[in-house]
Image (cartoon, rainbow, N blue to C red; front, top):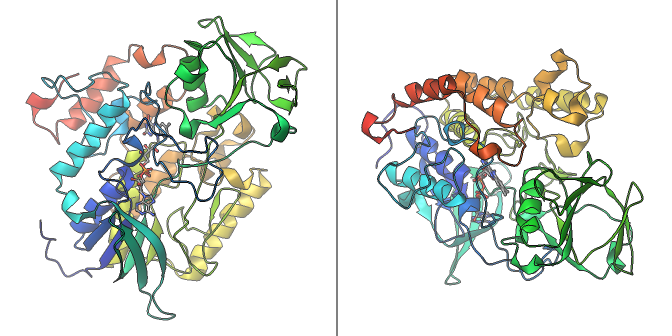
Length: 469
Ligand SMILES: Cc1cc2nc3c(=O)[nH]c(=O)nc-3n(C[C@H](O)[C@H](O)[C@H](O)COP(=O)(O)OP(=O)(O)OC[C@H]3O[C@@H](n4cnc5c(N)ncnc54)[C@H](O)[C@@H]3O)c2cc1C
C-alpha cells in the first residue's frame, strides 16, 4: 500500500514494537504519508496479548541477563473492560459471528483480543511494514546537529544492522519489567516468590498457603484463580480490612499490607495477623523501561516518571524526532494509542505545530509542580484517572481533576490534530466499567441503551452483517 500523495513532509520513521500501540502508530504514520519500518522482537503482532505458557527463569525477573518473556498474560485472563470501549475507533472490537474460535462475550478472553489485533493488522496491511524477530538494541541521535536518529538492531539469526531515521516512535509497552514492593525481612524469608509477570496457571499453588500482594485488576484476578486450587489465599492490600473473608471464596482472606516477613516462613500483616505461607505472588505493577534508548539525559525514568515529556508524548529537547505512544495508564488504551499516534504523525508531517521547546518545558514543569503541590508521588505521573474513583486522589477539588482526567487529555490531543473527541458512549461505558469489581462483574447485564449507542456508531465503520450484540 503506498502512502497518499500530498504536499506535507514525508518522513522516514521507525516504530519500536508491534503491540496494540505500534500497530496503530504504523497505520497512522503511513496514512499521513510517512514511510515506516516497525521493529518487533516477537514472531507476530499483538505484543502483550501473545499468550505463552513460558515464563522467565528468575520468577521475580531480577536477573539482568535473563531471557525476557514479553507477555504478562495468564491463561484464565479475560479483559477488564467491555469490548465496545476497548477497540480502536474506526475498527470496532465487535464479535465475529460464525467463527467458532472466537469468544463473543462482552469481556472476552485474551485470545479474542489477540485475534482482534491480528484482524486489525490484516485489514490495514500493517505487517508489510514490520521487521519481525528483530530487536532494537540501541536508539540514539545520529549526529549532534542533524536531528536524525540511528537505530541499531539484531534479528533472530544474529544478523545485526543499523539504519538512520528522521524520527523514532517508541511503542515498546510497559508491562514486562516488574516492580516489587519493599518488605522488611523478605531476603531471609524461605518461601517461593513470583511476580505476576511470570504467573500463568494456579496449578503450582495446589494445596498451598499463598499470599498475593496487591489488589488491583491482576491481584484480584490472580488471587481468585489461585483460590480455586490453593488451601488458603491471603491478599495484602493497601485498602484491606482486617482478616476479612471473600463472600464467594471461603479460602480467600483480605488483609492490610505486610509489615515484615521472617526467616521461619511467617509473614506479619500490619494488623498483627501472622500467616505461615508457602508462596508470595507479587502483583505490584511494572516499571517503564527503555534499555535501548540513549538520549544524553534528555529523557530519564525516575520512580516511574518518564520525563520530561510534553503531554506524555514528546521530550521537549528532542521533539518531534522522538516520541512515546501509550505511556499513560489507568485509561482506555487502544483509543488513546490511536489519538496519540495521529498527533505524532501530524506533527511529523508539519500539518500540526508544536509549541517552542521552552513553552513545552514550561508546560511540563507546571504539570510536575502541580502534582507535587497535591502530594501526588512521581510514580503516578502517567496515571489518567478520574480522581473520584482513586482513593489517593479523592481529596482533589473538581478544578484540579483536569490534571488527570482521561477525557480531558484525550480531547486535548484529539483537538491538536483535528480528530473527533472521545464518544459519549465510550467514556460512559468505561466510567461504569472501572467501578465494577465484584466476583462476577464481567458477566453482568449492561444498559441496552448505551450498547445500542455504541453499535449505532460502529455501523459507520462496518457492514451490518458482521455486527452482532
Ligand atoms: C495483565 C494485563 C491485562 C490487561 N488487560 C487489559 C484489558 O483488558 N483491556 C485493555 O484495554 N488493556 C489491558 N491491559 C493493558 C495493555 O497493556 C494494553 O491494552 C496494550 O495491549 C499495550 O500495548 P502496547 O503496544 O503499549 O504494549 P505491548 O503490547 O507490550 O507491545 C510492545 C511490543 O514491543 C515489542 N518490543 C519491546 N521492546 C522491543 C525492542 N527492543 N525491539 C523490538 N521490539 C520490542 C514487544 O515485543 C511487544 O510486541 C492489560 C495489561 C496487563 C499487564
